[in-house]
Length: 474
Image (cartoon, rainbow, N blue to C red; front, side, top):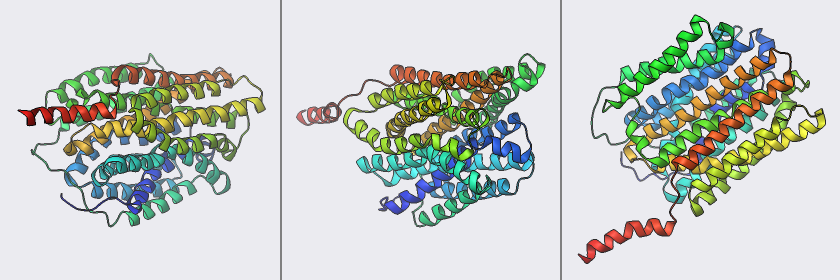
């Protein structure tokens, strides 16, 4: 759809607020686990499942929503996501038992699936060049900085107003976001072909992801060698193999495998999955200091204030490093910093005051790394795909974010809970945090192996202009 519209700060503010709603209903709940558990009288396993369901369903549906945004309109899909968030948040506000809590989290997963890829595609459509990189930096304020903002805000709100008020504020932000982007023109991609939706690939993907999530979050309850757990593991392995066979043999596969032929896109997507998995460190650290060291939700939120400041401060720095040296260097440095921060936080045998200092410093270093990573990774993912595939590629990239966060949370809680059963809370937290440091280490390896060493801007320009000059000479 052709339009002379250019992105502006009003549009960008609306998009950032829309993205923040995801973190407000997703990340804020991570910070108040003991409060919600006490208020509703549910087990940690059930609550962990409810928390991870948002990321799971978002991850499952985000590629579908990204593809639909290309066909139906990116603004329309964004607005749909915002409306779904209002519905899901209302479910949580009135929830008095686990059923409505879980339903609300699933609806919020659908909401996030719509909002995240569609807003990236809107940025790619209406911002160009350095302006697009600036816009993606601000989008990252909401996406990556949102984790820190909402972790702190969630603790503050839960302590002084009650945890349900988190979702009332989420509804308010959603309404403001809808007001600010109401005048943005619709954006659709030109479709070169019409094909049926890949229902078989979609349903196999759902089956595999749900089986994997359930075995991670409830495997200890079922028993790791029980028939239920072994069946879920078999479904995950066999279903995963079947999924790749199905989508790889179709021109309209649920996931366009051909996008992964681009090494930059692959490196950004894989490392994004792994660095979002370290979100599990937040639930481990917050739960540990509240349960073992008697911190309030607000006090535990204060521990991550350095993370919030660091992420917001470093996002534009990452953008500048990207423009100067390409994406590889800032992404490598970012992964190293994340590992360092998580390692500092794992020294749970320290006395209270010293451990508090280590956690504050660790969160800050962790935030510096993620802030530096945000824009180079996002720009690398969306800059190297065709315009007509912008929504789908953004959907795959954000699928890696949400599934990474979902499984990171699930794995972290599973590890923490398994060790906690021995009665050693310090060991449970330490091992849970080091599990996240391992995720960051694998992300570092993925970046080094998958993302090629960058050419300088001069070399890129030469690669483009020299063949043109040769053709003119002929």
